[in-house]
Length: 463
Image (cartoon, rainbow, N blue to C red):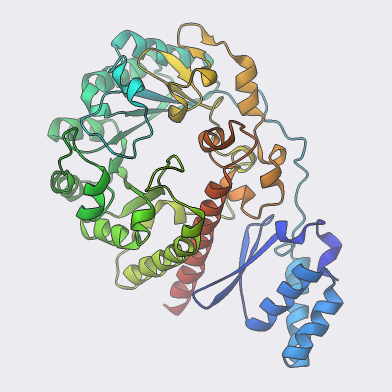
């Protein structure tokens, strides 16, 4: 059996080969299988992907390696093909459209547009922050009524976002009480994102009582954090944030959390920031690439990509080294489940912004997600009338990977789901045209995640 028997015209869309830290890795896109190869197998597959002729690839490999070894390697690769874990046939999803059954299941409540910080890279426009600074109780109630009215699901999520949500802690408490009272038959999940400066014992006790997941903002090393996360007067905040984080981490008890930071082109050595946060006691960490205008001096650029890719590999090694020392740290974007999920809708559409996930601002306006807030061309409706811009919602519903030219033949398509709609809109004002730079960053991060999985597998095998 020859691999090309079940392979699509674009072979590189179905198998991704890359090197990392001396590992030769092959990721089978359709089956989600990750293979660590030896050099002959790597050379043979690479030759096949480039030329498309299996016999010719075997002949080229035999000129470089011992012919019996090449013959054995070719047979082993064909066994993987037969098992459906290499060059696996993909399902035909080209005409996929999320069904009407995929209704609303999560609301992001921008419960406070106001903020006690003035982060230099904040994506929330100043004019948005200045109007209607906190969400009043009547809007909170109407937003939750809207969610309960529109959802077909038993399990619902409410994210409290800002600004700084704890500036409206009374609103958070009101929202939780209202949700539990009006949606008794529902299973609720609450999350809150905070810069931690207002996170006191009262807040922590409330969040523990109601099983909140917390996202705690810190960019890492003091010099990195203080470069961007400053007070309105320009003052440093790293010392206060560190105290707050250490207090939280000392009594975390089983609460779900992530310490979340942002990296820019000025700290492409962000492994050091992850290790700094781990040193504070954090066991769940996320660092996200900055969202910025290309003109910003801190925005990521094309020339940063090689260093960025190597940094994700460095981070993978650092995390495995920690585990060898008996310390497991979960890096959010390295927690891939290649075999058990996500579901088809998630694989093809990503986050579900615009129809499964919506954001509500303090005025009660509904947007596809918090990053669209204040952009009138993306206003979907309001909590009183519901969704008015149904055509816009259908644009989001239909923005899946098989309608995006960049995604159709991308090896990362099922792992990223087509990328961030907000980034696409900022780049081209077209949901079907992802930002090419954001795609390259995502690919680098996913290669880092796959490398981490291979390293972790080797560690487990050595025990």
